[in-house]
Length: 453
Image (cartoon, rainbow, N blue to C red; front, top):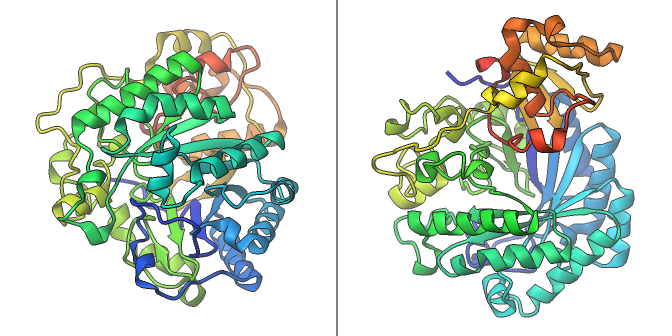
């Protein structure tokens, strides 16, 4: 049974509904009906930060719409969050960026942007954004961010229309200075459920073809790769080959994520149209409780429940299942009918790692943050990366974090060698003597329960 949290650990917060683009795959489909737009005010932001502090939220992503369209609140919000010890990041298409705005956000503590690049081809990017000149404006925004020392990742939403462009797009953004590219599958919006346009479709062979291009780009250019929406592990089959896409899982089902619209409506998933109340009226705890079906395995596809990887995969994408089957507990359309895992991967049993754990001392970095739950702890590693730990393990980590002392395997417990290995790989603990760059190549893998091994 999955651990149930008291509150989310990460918030996707839309500070405005306004957007300077109308992407063909956008889940905010209602923007076409001339509805009223909302933009958050500073006083409302203050209310939200108070809620986040009470809930001990670790990380907040400010997004939109296009967050630069409400720039003063964007800048104010980042300052307010960092002042209160909450880590931050920003999702933006960067088309409205200029030198002054980038400098101001840098001064406010922003060190990362997630932007969107849909193709290396200018015409196709502009067409997907429905904005003439989008391709050039985004490139200029990326260059400005890198000029001022802000890391940039690029999200490429992949469908049938751009599946052949993945490798060259990865090369293109790498040359612009992007550190990581996400090959994210298109998930049709809820209003297209059962009637999905051809250009937004994406089958299993096309998905593997796109991911193969990303793997090749990683090997050729050294760019990091991943996905923002889970691919079913039974689609991948060879988990060693596709290890960079194994770790995403579903943040909503795991209980980590809450999405908040600019008007205060709360959702479990950014793609979801169901509201679980308004945070300004009900507060974060009440809204989170209403999301229990996301958290208690109610939405798992029935045939996934006996899969050994169900706690990593979370039954693929539930909004994809709804789009293709009209059921939240339906089958993700990319799932294999007869799953075969040809090359399993177990992070904590890497022989090279287990051998070296006996030799060295470890320490607990000051960046770790802890949140006590009913029968366990949540340990935030950095940004939105949070894992669960037993009371015993977490309290051990807190003691050594406070003292600053180092410890070895004998001190930690020789019977818990695999747990120590996982703590190291997940970047919970550090070792000055080990080559972390080479040994942590699998650190993103979604082993969220440290003591489950």
